Image (cartoon, rainbow, N blue to C red; front, side, top):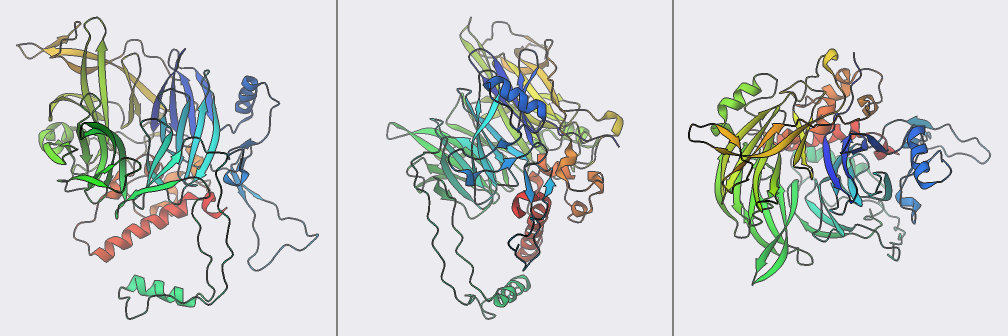
Length: 570
């Protein structure tokens, strides 16, 4: 079987003073690419000798064999990564301590790096913030003018983050986790921050607060029995040992997070919008009044997967969900102004595309909403549209927004499932394509002879206007009535993305599709599909008792932890 390599499942455009860079996340690595010629500028983390030498050539330092991933001022926050592994596990027999003079047992190398799930870049192009899954870490990277990446800090969160953004002044990181909490972290940790001092915990016999009279379900009774067997009190679990603040919380799993600015009493104030699995969108005031709930945006019947504040109409919120549909809100009042049902309005196109793969037509969800704007300095006008993708389908839908109404204007069919979209400064739109899975599937791999390295298609965003006969033509004057459409670019460059083998995600030599640990959970994704997709896991199992649904979710989480690996056990 051909070697599977990660596609570029996250894209970010860095707009520098001299040159534009493209940051592409390929599994466990971030690759920096030149937009002018597609040249590979850097790969982070640097796990090969050529990567380490390129870093030292830039900084004129002696090459080092180990790379520090933690914060320089606090080594306890980071880990050292060797050339072939990020961490290693020391095997010590339970109940036996190493005696004085006894040789230390050899460490077992682990070639698994944490997967990068989210990436955002500051508008000045000097810093990027990445989220890694297995160690639940928030990593801040500096970006040099030559496109080199260097980690400045690493901070491990209590729970795995599912969304990340920067505050309007880009000095604070906002993260949302899967337990419903939103935290704020400074972009640059303060050196004078007073860290917590661990307090010794008193010894004593552990007594569970619950009893057989207050616990009724079978699963909870089993948990109570395990607690009763525990004889020693466990030490109190301390929070993160770095500067952070809990801003707000939901009672449900969070799915997305955005910031916006609105007028209150004639003054412009910040707001934080959060979406969860239970079909709620909460509008909270910005810092330091995040405990104040301003409004709710309701009306969804399935989980909310994506939020988008329209840049050219900041009072408008477009939310995608698992119905799948697009709901348009006046988010300050919480009023739903319109709704576009993708399955009903685009049934013919979706059915035609979905039948080519294994993706169920009955279980589709919005995976991305991207605003695209074309500006023309000569006429001082702009034209805009929204691009929408459905998880596991090789298609992009273009929408024009008029007030609070959405109108479908274009369907772009691609050679593979859409993973991410980004617009560059040159009015180009880059689309990352899934090169591992078959088109229209999140589970089946492509045949070995059609596998390819990470692929990014380039389109040109142009303005068109419709003529009386129903055709369209390019509108060179960019009239205000024009709409934005995507056309294949004639000057596209080939991005020299380094292949990142997907085999490093497993500790077995067998192919990923034969991984028995993964098959027993019967998820709708392949092993790699779970890392680059995963939205379908948010869908509630209708008709199941609450206890059974909770058990399914717990079992899925246990499966995730089994497959995560080193960081949880190191």
